[in-house]
Structure formats: C-alpha cells, structure tokens
Length: 279
Image (cartoon, rainbow, N blue to C red; front, side, top):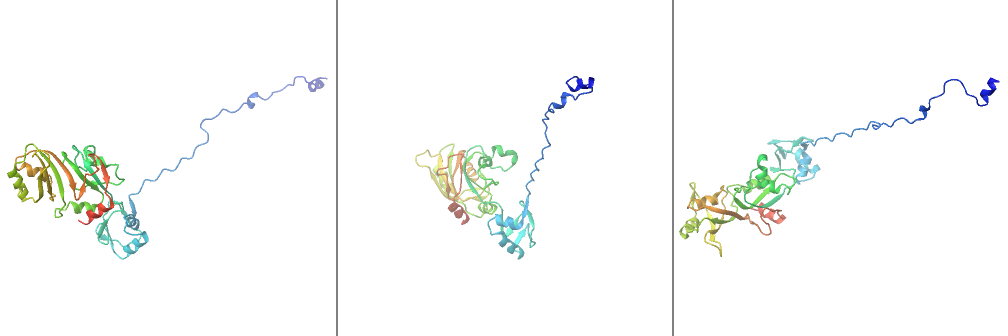
C-alpha cells in the first residue's frame, strides 16, 4: 500500500535538485577578451632614392632608376648607382648636378608686422615671423634674408634651398624699396649725399633712387637700393644723425604689398616664381 501511495502523489523521500540550477549565471561585464589593434608603425625617415627623385618632380621612378644606374645622382657628395638605395630627408641629393628636395617647392609672401623677428630657433617661434606663416604650408618654410624686429613689410618664405641661396647672394642685385620715417626732416644736403652713395662701415652703398614722399612731411622718405647688407637702411640714416622711427619694406624683388594687409600672407603665383627664377 505504501508503494501505491507514493505513486499516487505522496511525498517522495530522497534528495531533490536545488532550484538554483534554474537561475541564470551572473553577467560578467568583462566578456571575451578583445583583440588589441596593432600599433601603427612610426613613419620612417628614410625612402628609396628613386621615390625621393620622383617626389621632387624631376621624373618618374622608372626614369629615376635609369639616372641612378648611369651615375647621375649624388647623395652627400657621393655618386650612388645602387638600385634600392635609401636616403634620409636630411641628406643632400643632387640630380644631374642640381640639388633637389622631395618636398613640393612653395613660396609664401608675408607682410610682417612690427615686433616679430626672423629667428628660426624653435625656442623663439612664439615671437618669430615663422609663427605667422606656420599654417601656410605642411613643409618647413624659412625666411629669405632678414627683417629686424622693428622693421615691417615684405618677407619671403620658402623651402626652396636653391632659391633662398640665390636671393641672399651678395652678388645678386635684388631691388628693395623702403618707406622711412625719421625723427626729423631730412636736410636736402644730406639727401644729396645719400643719393650719391654713402660710405657705411668702409664700403660704399649704391642707391638706386631716393625721394621725399609726396604730400607728407620731409621726414618721410622713399629709398630704393639693391644691397643685401644687414640693417643697411637704418645704418645709412643713422650715419647722418637721424633716428629711424619706422621702416617699412614696401617692395621686394618686384613683389609688392598690394592687397596684402599687415600680418597676412599669400602664396606667390606661378608667374611670380618664374620671375624670381629669372633673376
């Protein structure tokens, strides 16, 4: 009878399974381990010589290989004829006797305001004119020549080393026009002496033209000269006993400040670059 009661619904003896088995396992916030993305490789400061030449715009890579194989390419003064040779961006590479760069050549004209020098030191970029053209190019542009901190006006920047060297060569006659504000009126006798070419620091300075500025006091002077000597305009007037209050370079190598406000810059046109190259 006991067995029959068990079958009919009586209590069964023995252990029963725990209800915990029906509970969901606690959620783990970690989840499966994620695969780490591979770290990007640091950009190399080296590139194949044929690519370097192609990037400079001289010719294609295939054509560059031909020039390399025939010994027409030099790296740091040594002829390189090895295929696959790698160079650094800091190396000096000459293609058919001419120095080249893998960077696109760019030319930027700045109307420099007062208070900025032409230092290229990283420590002084906050007060250097280089900081004013920092967004003009992805390449490092350097000033062509100098303008003193208190001198305003046109200043050319470029990454074209050959052009920079050419325009700063003391033997090249680059026309520059300045507007000068003096502390007092320029005497006509001093005007004539400057016009004839003054002797500054033992060397004569050739003056192309000098004039009083129209409809302005006699202390406002325009002067045109070709000298590349540093700070020469101030030295000229100071040698005659005048203090230069303001000095503004209004023209440089045929480039002018037209439509270029103080503190602004612009890229040279193709024709302007051609004109500079023909000097």
